Length: 288
Ligand SMILES: [Fe+2]
Image 1 (spheres, rainbow, N blue to C red):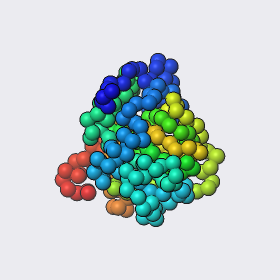
Image 2: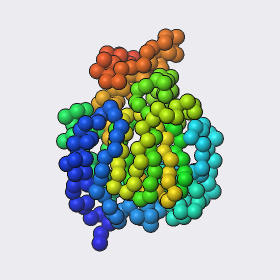
Image 3: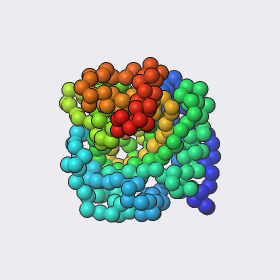
Image 4: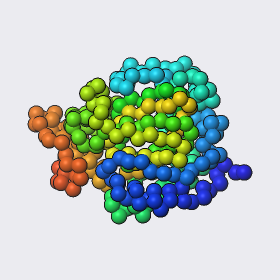
């Protein structure tokens, strides 16, 4: 068996695409997938991949972290990334392999999956830009702290169980506009956590065969179950998501000038004038 064997479509059946069509792009929700036992996604294959990737494309740390933690306070687990993955059952760690599309076999896998989604995505948010894949390998009971991400994302659960706790995207009760501005001008993805947030989330339980659609910038944290977990995250950007990023960056520039801009609207057609203005100012080197 060759490692780069094509997957047998569909991984997302008609009912999964229908469910996605009802949610995309603004709401989180559960989907089903049929990606099982792919040789590129075994523990051994992932450990080899991790060893082959540049250091900038791997991130790993102890998994028994609090829900809210500043990035500079996250400690090392003392192992190499390959060792971390091979001993994930016992080392109480969390690891992510980033931009797996830089490896040709994984790029093929990613593009096969994204192509199945194209009929749902492109009529809604236009061309699927910047395809990226991430693989999360985590020990029992590990926590991925409260954060948000800039991509359109579907996370496929492949092994073990976890609960995705997700809050509404664009709701300032859970991620203030200043947090968006900080992130879109180079800040870390982790968000300040308050215990009062608990209870307002969707808690989406994931087992092998389950997936979750994650909207752009929806705050979330992930709690792993009692077994080691492997999840594959397939992501893309849209012109819309880039415009939203630029609107937040434009607001950060305005705030530095003493203004107090409002949160950009979720559907940033309305922010178009501001983002175009910001692009012009950036070209004129009037903002960074
Ligand atoms: Fe995330």
